[in-house]
Amino acid sequence: MYLRMARRLLFETDKRLLWKLAWNMGWKGMLSVQRHKERLRRGEVFPPFLYVSIINSCNLRCQGCWVDVASKQEIIEPPAMHKLIREAKEMGNAFFGIVGGEPFMHPHLLDMLAEHPDCYFQIFTNGQFITDERAKRMRQLGNVTPLISVEGNEIISDERRGRANVFSKTMEGIHHCLQNKVFTGVCTSLCQTNIDDLLTEKWVDRLVEMGVMYTWFHVYRPMGPDANPQLCLTPEQQLRARRFVVEMRASKPIVIIDAYYDGEGQALCPAATGISHHINPWGDIEPCPIVQFTKESIHATEADSRTLRDKFLHSDFLHDFRTLAQSTTRGCIVLERPDLLSALVQKHGARDSTARGSALAELDAMRVRTSQYNPGHAVPEKNVFYRLAKRFWFNDFGLYRGHDHRRSAAPGLLRQAAAGAPR
Image 1 (cartoon, rainbow, N blue to C red):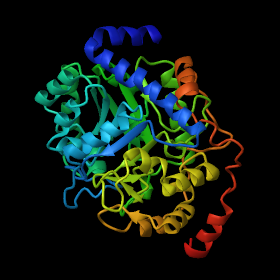
Image 2: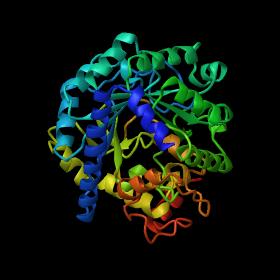
Image 3: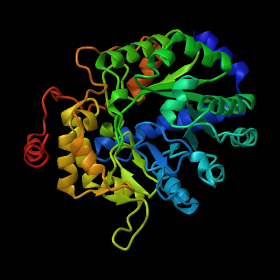
Image 4: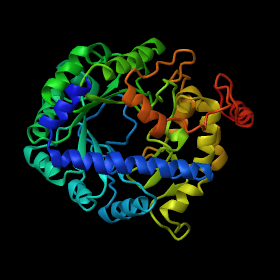
């Protein structure tokens, strides 16, 4: 498998793009995590990986989408984006996830990224706006990788994404990227309607044959005003997905990402460990994309002119979110204990950062669900490379240590939730 992967990298990639990936994302990414670990020892958190939703608009209407895609368009303007990236670079950051809405609907997307050749950008996209011209531009930039979402076959994709001919248009975008030797990934939000079609060795083999270099199977989360909980995977299916990823990593010449497990197969939450946080199109700083509450913004105001560094390091809301999440579960506190999160939001007076203004009501109406945390069913990595990489640069950094996550370790907030947030 290692030899086949090396052969793919040698013969199927643009070597300049591969160098940019290895240097900007690989080497600098490792250094940024090392700095994160050093900050943790001082009790400070500045996420080494920031995810930035640069626009709320999207051309699709996916089932269960929590982004206000049909609301008035809001974008992060280039000056604000450049300031954000510069201040993050001062903290050692080099990697940024670019999210939406649909990022390619932002009128200045690639021009903004071109201003920072010393960084690496992963664009989460449906691929339908990736023309041959845009793919050529991404190859020319060299520091951009598109992660293109495929949510099922022709029929399922149309149903899942609320438009016609979605699959063919997305595959065309993938084709443009691969034709231009752009380092390209494909991701899938696993749910009841696509797990049997895409969580398969046949699909992974097809991606390899196409020239796709990495893939990501993440699990559908029922959030937003129309959460579609019927799409949720069962705990057995989530365990099946984890086992599949581990097996494919050990046997297929394609990189497979996951963001919710360490090398020993123990669950974790990137927001709880502080390795990543999210910034929405209005500039609001949120714990993660599905926790749509905020106390700070990247934009300076008369009331708060602090630097990005100070806003992260001295945010009581973010600090208490991480503490609560770490002491409650190794999984997703939003799914497992929405009552505790609601109590936290109310305690801090955190602002609803959605355009629709109903995030707290949605949280209070949520039914408790399982997440990636499944005690007694850890599936360790079989691939030695992944296991070692995670041991040094992607784990819980000791933050969960000493907690019994089968019981809440936040009794004060639990009492508040019981009193003020009926279930």
